[in-house]
Image (cartoon, rainbow, N blue to C red; front, top):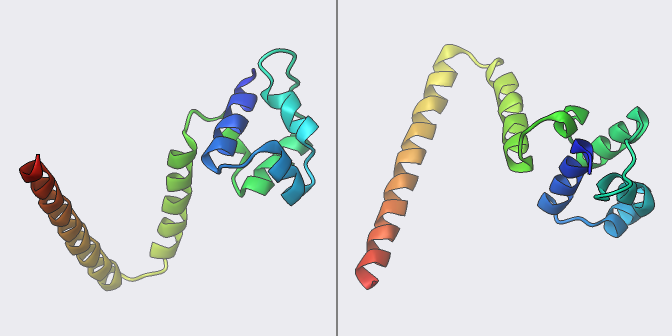
Length: 123
């Protein structure tokens, strides 16, 4: 299987989508998808196919040539969007958000630690 095929299979599993469902939702044939994900006798996709599949999954075609997991790729995409939004704020607004996020994260960690303590006491 090609690197593209591995990445395609990975994103399909991550999104819990199978060729028949993708075909139903997008019109991309399951036969086409199958030729890219077969272990033996696979085909390399055309640029148009790469863009068509990337568009369906709402990802950049570069994902298929990266070493990122789908989860990590999605996180990076969110980070890029957040950075673009933060660029619109002034320093005071950014400082406020930083303090809010820090306080939220601290509270979340404290709650997780409390849960772990309760679990360990039950054991």
